[in-house]
Length: 118
Image (tube, rainbow, N blue to C red; front, side, top):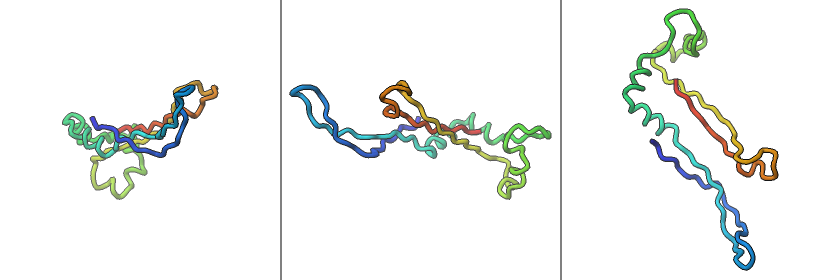
């Protein structure tokens, strides 16, 4: 498992507490980041996964199952050199933790970067 890294994006001062116990505190805006390269290195230490990658997944017949089976891939100069490729697909999605129609919309929004290897 690769540990997430905390990155501070900025900070602001807010009043917290109630009555005579109100005080000004600094609130940090942070994000958590899990490095992609470190995660891939860790995954490739798994011998079963490494064996699957080394096999390759290009189809032997004419059925289009994957990007590797396409004409553009086979005509690319780098692809004709080796059949062993690690495809990394990157996705991004937003997630609301609260009611998206309520007064606090966009306050508790989380952005997710997801990757899939093939």
